[in-house]
Amino acid sequence: MIALPPELLSQLSDALWQAFVVFLRVSALVSLQPAFGERSIPTRIKLGISVAFTLVVLPAIPPVRFNPELWTMIRLVASEVLIGLVLGIGLRLFVLALQTAGSIAAQSTSLSQLLGGAAADPVPAMGYLLTLAGLTLAVTMGLHVRAAQLLIQSYTLFPAGLSPDAPDLSRWGVQQVARSFELAFALATPFVIASLIYNLALGVINRAMPQLMVAFVGAPAITFAGLFLLFAGTPLILSVWSDALIAFFTNPFGARP
Image (cartoon, rainbow, N blue to C red; front, side):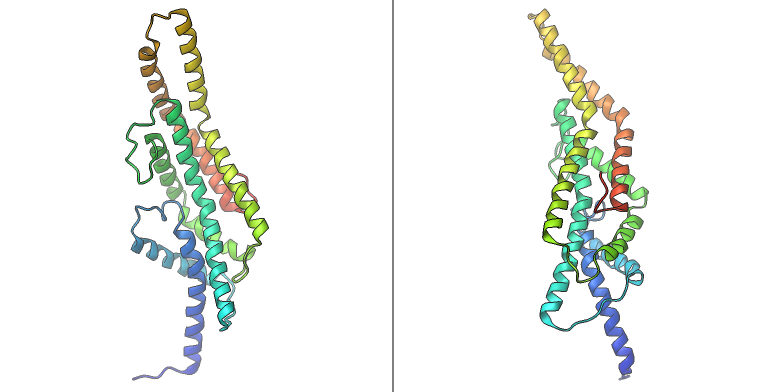
């Protein structure tokens, strides 16, 4: 049996320790990251993606000092997982914004029950289509590259072992949730306006001709209008959404989606 020199064993243990620390933050982010962290993705694929991101991020960050004390190691593991989850939740809120926008649009245009069970999450067809299109657009725009840059940048903001302050983290979380709903309502605005105009016109016609079954006449109109708005407005919706996502990648703790 070949005995390895003590210097080589020391370097190997330090390298494995560095990789383990980076893997904690990376795996937490990948578990919630759009496209790569979806529930339809097998766990083994997520593990392979986490290992690949670890190999990319590891050479670009400063070395982490090893401290064998138990409490220090527990604090390090908890802080790394927490930072990865925070970044992952920030990215996951953009997917929830698309799903919420699709739900609002479907409810406004009476299309909420069309293919409602096609996705893993119980979202209407519009939400499913917008989410699928948004994830596809994000991947084609280099989601993996931007995620690696975000991870490397996170070590500048939060070095290994340094966890964010609880008040700042809670304030940031509330702002991100509020901005996610703000983005969702902004994306669904054309459908809400169309629904408002439709209901106002329907009320005027019903007052003018009470004997006419306006609901049977107006239902195909609002359905066609909803499908037309989905066809014509999806490029603009995805453009606004992708700009907000890129802004988050650029400055995750200060960008406004």
